[in-house]
Image (cartoon, rainbow, N blue to C red; front, side, top):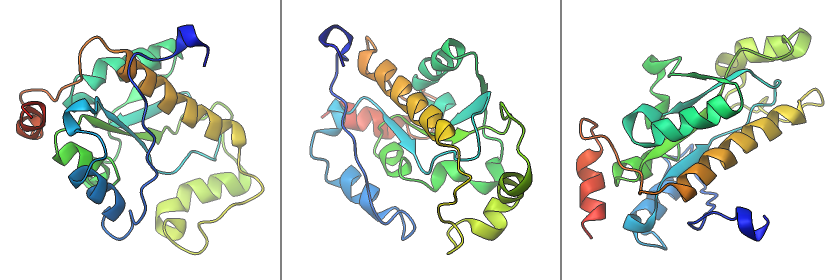
Length: 193
C-alpha cells in the first residue's frame, strides 16, 4: 500500500490449522498469543471463500455483538451490498470456526459468509453444487477444486475481508464487545491487562 494509505494499526494475518479437529490452531494462538490480547483490535475470519459467483450480499457473523457492527455496515454501504444477518442460526456457525477462540478470550470477531443473491444467477453444475454443498460436499473428498469456480467471487470475498480489516485498523477506538454480549466479560478482562 502507498504510505499515505497504510493503516494506523498493524494487520496480523494468521493461517491456523486443525479447524476440523476442534479449532486447535486458533485455540492455541488465542491462549498463547504472540502479541498481547489487549493489542488485538479485532478478528476477521474467512473460513473458505465464495467460488460460486459474485454476490450482492454477504454476512459477517458476530458483527452485531460488538462495535465491529458499524464498521461492517460501512463496508457494505460503500460497496452497495446488502448485509445479511445469520441466515442459518440453528447451525451455530458463529461457534464453529476459527474466529470463535478469539471471541472466547474477548477479541471482537466476525466470520465472513458469502450471500446467495448472485450477480449472475447460478445455473448448471454451480447451482447443483451450491444447492447441495452442505449435505454432499462439505468436508468430503468431493470438496475440491473445479474448473467452473469463479475467481472474481473469491477476489470479492477477500476484498471484503481486507476492507473490514482496514476499518478495524483505522478505527479511532479499539473495538469492544457490547455490554449485553456473552463475551463482554472476557473483553473487559483482556483489556484490563
